[in-house]
Length: 276
Image 1 (cartoon, rainbow, N blue to C red):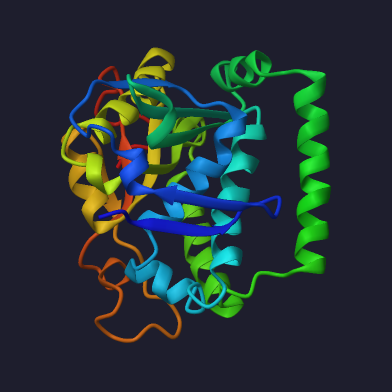
Image 2: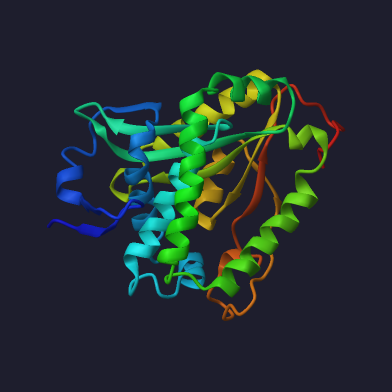
């Protein structure tokens, strides 16, 4: 049976993911490589499909199915914005026999102002990337003005952002944590889960953090928390409650699962600044 997800891309064209076409052989060799900017539509579509019926998405985007093109557009816009940021490093998982079809991805951001952060930004410094990033930001403002997102509840999104900002101040302000790699998004196609792809993608970020002797941070969903724990992350705190959420509808924001997590390099010793 062929499962299809269709909608509008960030630039207005139609994007369709067909499971039958995508999965020629879920058990074939998986290759991890850096993402290409042109793959942002695939990254966004994969995330949109994966999170379509998650509790958090249901809360934040109650009208996503009525306005699917807007919902999809949001994920693709975020994927491209990250790819254009010189602090960003993105990786994709592809099948050896279909190297241009993304089955998983991870996007990391190098935060801080230390030497490692400066090297990351310098490694991606170019006139065309700066120009493209500027044009993209202008285009985003035009799109939002002409055709604003109708899938998302703005009040609920504001509540979610407020909780995220508060957690940022509590856990990532000390210098030893401000200078870090942060996993922004890690997604694996459901038909490829259970093969260790998520772990392999995470190790790309962890390896760089270890080389630079900095930590890695992220916000984990309930299912994601288990995988991140297996690659060395520990929980800092559970997420706080969200305004207007029905009791029992958001276990990740009722102290039951998920939360802010950190990976620390082996060289860090007990009592290092910023460590709990």
